[in-house]
Image (cartoon, rainbow, N blue to C red; front, side, top):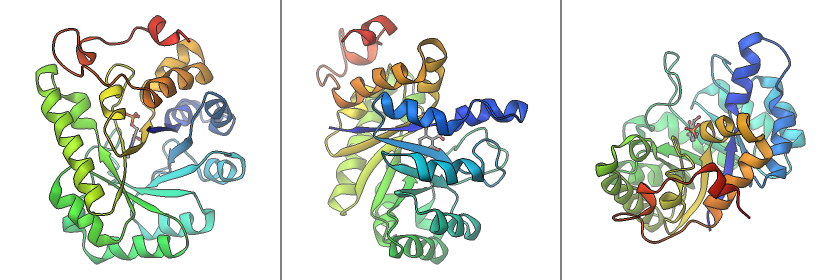
Length: 262
Ligand code: PXP
């Protein structure tokens, strides 16, 4: 059964739009946990456009589930993570001009710098996850880096036209299998929604899904605790069959009402 990591970056984006004190991701992390979040994820970006240093410090002291710190593989961020001691670090590529994380890390091309960041963090007891596309060459490079986890990039699946989704899903299934053969543990995320999450949650060996935008969007309508509860239901109890075809899951997006039923 997959668990749910709730990404709270967008709550900080709203706050930073006015450079004020509300909404506070620290308070909202508690609401997400009350809704069933198994973990809280925040991305401390180099430009501090949403999550601030103060947020990660307070979240470290208040999160009772697990704190996953998403960050770029830089010396500055590694120093912050070593001081903070999150339950996991997820290394992602970061570009100032991007709206959100775009692609996965190119671990095969990354070389010794990345390996040394992974080693520094893991020898301090912080497991490292590498955000990558579900490609065999990347997964093999992840295993060589010494990282214990990968987060498979689900953006290709989420953004694919309906006709191509089965192929994109198959890549995730294969990637998950390959990663596990290599001894890696597997999370996934990016672009997952209430409509497309279940086939990914049903992948054998998938441990945690990191989901942000769709939950925060729904929270505006129903409140964060309820939005997390609805997503937790889908992630922890995905309907396995049928995934595709006549009347299948991917052509049958759940309505808000359907999800809200106990
Ligand atoms: N995983 C990673 C590595 C991400 O960068 C993001 C976006 O910050 C997510 C998961 C969550 O993506 P979304 O907001 O589209 O659910």
